[in-house]
Image 1 (tube, each protein chain N blue to C red):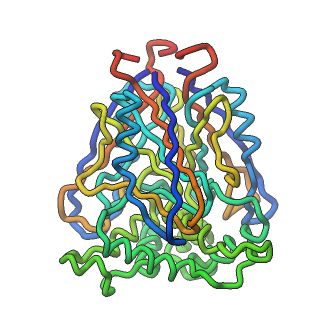
Image 2 (tube, each protein chain N blue to C red; image 1 turned 30 degrees about the vertical axis):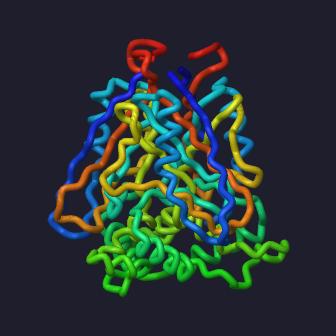
Amino acid sequence: MVVHTDYLVFTTKKRQEFVRITDEVSSIVKTSGVQEGMVLVSAMHITAGVFVNDWEDGLIQDFQVWLEKLAPSGLDYAHHQTGEDNADAHLKRTIMGHQVMLPITGGKLDLGPWEQVFYAEFDGRRKKRVVVKVMGIGAGGSE
Amino acid sequence: MVVHTDYLVFTTKKRQEFVRITDEVSSIVKTSGVQEGMVLVSAMHITAGVFVNDWEDGLIQDFQVWLEKLAPSGLDYAHHQTGEDNADAHLKRTIMGHQVMLPITGGKLDLGPWEQVFYAEFDGRRKKRVVVKVMGIGAGGSE
Amino acid sequence: MVVHTDYLVFTTKKRQEFVRITDEVSSIVKTSGVQEGMVLVSAMHITAGVFVNDWEDGLIQDFQVWLEKLAPSGLDYAHHQTGEDNADAHLKRTIMGHQVMLPITGGKLDLGPWEQVFYAEFDGRRKKRVVVKVMGIGAGGSE
């Protein structure tokens, strides 16, 4: 059994930004040598998420408009009494999800035709991390 | 360590349909021989989801009414400029979740009394797949 | 490979209550002896969830106000024709998520600086369980 861990680091230019990370995750899976297993991709900060959906600019715009409607910024949130101003970012990331588990089959991410992995930043412009943890059977045989 | 992979295929008659798949997942777990471990059940299409909740027709209806309220169809979504008409399906599946990890204990799904696994289709009437990946310790001993 | 299973039990005093469980999960991980792997923390009841977010009372209040707005109690839900009165609890737990997978690195939960694990009860005052399933490589070497 192989367990391999890596981290992705993001410092987005905009407060809210969706970054496609399918290739980075694929590359970590390749490095791990895992042939059959799973990989966890999980945001380590609580105002960011990780999700799987379509790589289409219009849809990404739709997601952002929709999230602003469901979890508006600028409201008088109780969290802001601590001096923070990002309660909406905590709510938005909850809608999108904070992690995914991706199957690995034959040494590759076993994704459907349109599945792409995204990092969803809702309070950026500072350094944040995503943990990528691969677990499974390596190339050496049953282990 | 055992890793076993299978796929479920759906072609729903209606555009939106929730299909109970607990028995199909249980059957794949049994075939895998895994006694202690986990199984990932994940939609491979980005307008469908997988979730765990109650097997009660009224509640399923409540979910569908609620999702239409939170993520309405028929709006002028940016995604539709590509010729698509299913932006709402991408949003609805995001609310429901696109995958679950189910524990396996003593060779069986370790579910609570009312937990049932569902496939949630939001843009059906065509062939779609769900990946079911089982990982754990088989019956042969510590491996 | 090690697979270790435990259960947390909750009987909250209030119908809706968020309970921090990071320490309980950490303790189960320690008991398991897993050095490198993952732990699944999953609600076994369909009106409760498990999520990762900030341990800040104001934000917890914001979450609860927000969930009541997105999935109000007291509506005339179809589920209530069965005699139940908790349809909103099923919807609220869907927003928050019903499970998380946490990475284990060096024998400890590999969490970001502000990540805390919570049990989210939406229909409490009765006994409910959460399954905690640890899987990975133990201290004894490659296995």
